[in-house]
Length: 112
Image (cartoon, rainbow, N blue to C red; front, side, top):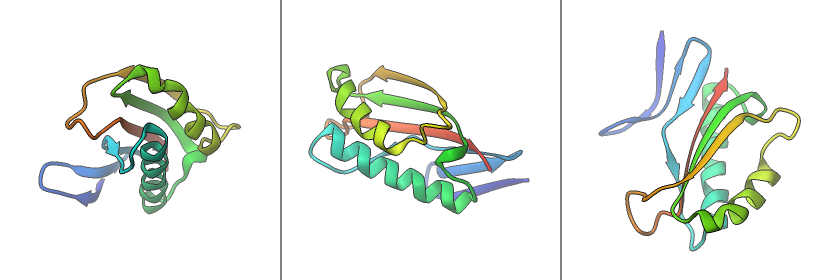
């Protein structure tokens, strides 16, 4: 069975299948990379909770930064948020995002 969370016009915010939840790429509001990252991670917390899981069960994360020079700013927020006893695999790359205002986008998968 597939459970689709928060379906929209083009995609769902998350999909649960075979005991794994995968989020769409989540973007956030804020004037800088740190504030956008905090907003994104709060949205991810809510999606994981709706799926019946939490960041303690993360298995992977993909992170896109508009400017890789902001890697440390994003990591400062990430390190405070992530469960240090249950770290996922992770990839972080620089990428041109959908609009100039977007500085970071994060997608995660977790066990349910």
